[in-house]
Image (cartoon, rainbow, N blue to C red; front, side):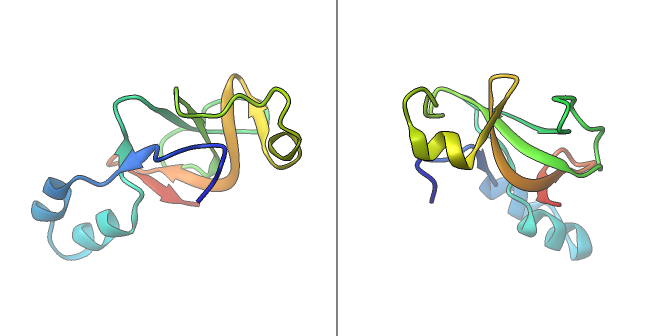
Amino acid sequence: MTTELSPLATVLHPEDHLHAEGSEFAARLKSAGVPVSTAEVKVMTEDNEEVPLGEVGEICVRAPMVMNGGGYGLFANHSLVMANYLARANAGIINLRELLDQG
C-alpha cells in the first residue's frame, strides 16, 4: 500500500471475470483492471508523452485521491510528479483491451 495514492486507482470488475475464456481469462485476471471513475491513469515516457497501447512506460495517476507533493519530503524523494500526475516508478502497459498490466 502506498501513502501517495489511496485507496485505489484501478479495478477489475466482476463482469470482467465472467466473459472471458482460456488465455483471455488469464490475461484479464493478471491485469490491474481499468481506472476507477475518479482516476485518470496513463502510461508515459520520461518526456511526459503517453505511450501507444501495448508499449511499456511509467504508470502515472491523476485523481483527487493523489496526495499533493508540496511539503512531503518522503513523497518528493520517492515519486516524480510528471505533467500533474503521480508517477509510480512502476513499469506498465495499457494493453489492447485497455486494461493496465505490469510492464
